[in-house]
Length: 302
Ligand code: HMG
Ligand code: MG
Image 1 (tube, helix red, strand yellow):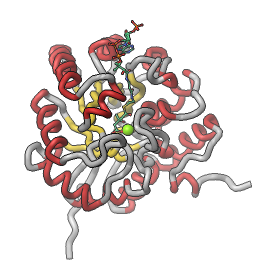
Image 2 (cartoon, helix red, strand yellow; image 1 turned 180 degrees about the horizontal axis):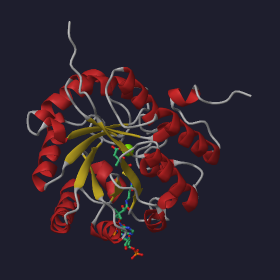
Image 3 (cartoon, protein in one colour; image 1 turned 90 degrees about the horizontal axis):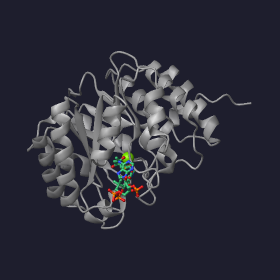
């Protein structure tokens, strides 16, 4: 029997944004910059470095401008930032981000809690931002969060996720990142959701953003790979969570994902040893062991 998986995949490293937004200890600006530069040195080519959101809502990322300005940029790397509205977009533009990301949940309650707007109102804001981004030639992607379930509303209709994916691609998103914000999905659900979305939009516009709360993320990625999905978000060491999604833990760890992909002969440009070194430094700063399994094989036992 022959299996067919993609030969290579695109990664979006979200550790500096999704990861650090939800850590108990706040990492200082210089160490954030060092972390991002280390991630780039390990071969990661797309990095979400911060979020231009209200610092009152997300205090750990309050130094977003300093971080964005402080990074020594490397050619061939796309530096991304999350923006929830025009104000955030303008800051991303002023700090020369290569691309931006919008976030919209497939649930009204989560949108109210996370970005203080109902779904339709927030989409109208993003439409304005997308038009500006098109004028400025700034590519954007869109997270559809709570796509596998919502911490407030429970089950989320597949049709709602598909509809938002269509709206964002029509608006010009180069990719929609389907978010399992609370890590509640399973491989069967992943197959069904991806199949439903790719009936309406091209497969190469679909990415997955999977929090690993229940240890399902790699199994879900395997399911998506078997359908030909080629783009995944992940977080160094498995850092992260969403402060407005109770119980959400970190994203799938970049180390565990890269290990699995390389073992399956699927190429990434990441040097796993270098990446582990960067995450080990970060866990020292955070004074806690990060959840990545591969990282646990690299700790020096004293
Ligand atoms: P709001 O209070 O409705 O905003 O917040 P507003 O427009 O009414 O303005 C109120 C104040 O906020 C004003 O300041 C604005 O200037 C300021 P004041 O006059 O009171 O001094 N403001 C801003 N400040 C900085 N940056 C901005 C900005 N916009 C307005 N961009 C807002 C609306 C969206 C700003 C707020 O709700 C917010 O910042 N939310 C951020 C939430 C967030 O970052 N959540 C975590 C990321 S999402 C996630 O993790 C999920 C994801 O990973 C996918 C997945 O896991 O599935 C992406
Ligand atoms: Mg997330």
